[in-house]
Image 1 (cartoon, rainbow, N blue to C red):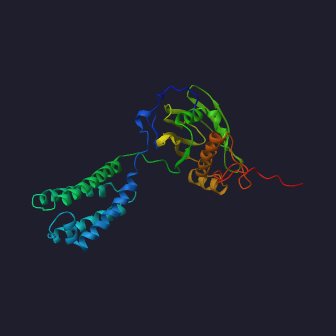
Image 2 (image 1 turned 45 degrees about the vertical axis):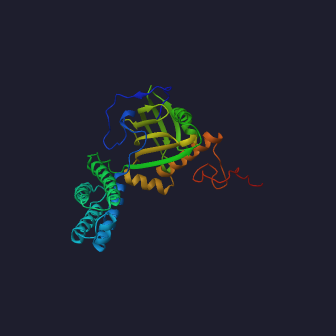
Length: 332
């Protein structure tokens, strides 16, 4: 995936995105940290909406006093409560992309803000009203963000595509980790499923990896984004045995306490969904491989070698150990 290019920032001239790929070709197209998960936030807002709605229906006078009112307008607050419950139910009823439900929440937020503005002229509890208004504005910002993100028309990944995100904290600076990752010849040191990697051009390389049940898979890859000390993105070229694309990011922790290495990969195993299931039967799932690869890389960089043990003689599976020990030699 990554090829050696010194430290110059690289931007390729290939097409912006492949069908089903969520990775950029230029560093400027991707933020230095991953975006918020709008679907997950929406689910949280759904529970919040239902909880608030139940409270407004059951205790409208209490809600009125909390927001600086006089405890009246119970019927109006109950109606708002029913609206909140319906909005929450819509979020869960619309599956993984409840864009319409989130826009209904935005409309409800506008009603709430208008109601609070009217109440401001007669309320004696300005502090409570201001606090309530600030909270409504904060929730409105989340609602608008989720509605916009969930409304974006993103291409669907092809059937059988597996998306994975893994991260590890390594006690080294981003610059050192970037240099290590950028030298693809380092990869077989911690990626045990790789057999060979060789450069085929200024920004391309050829990969040979072990597949399930003793098979082999090959592909050519090219760098699509390269920002020194921050990120490297790649994708496989056409006719690959394994279609894949991904990005690795290096995020420094506060106070110089190491770096978060975050890897995102989209992967289409040979045979699609069936191939992924077969791979897992042979204990060769890509999710486990990436987990093991990152923690072996951590060991290589921090200690110079992969810690092995009786339970993990090849440094796999149990790479995170409280105390490393050499594999025992059976007595003769």
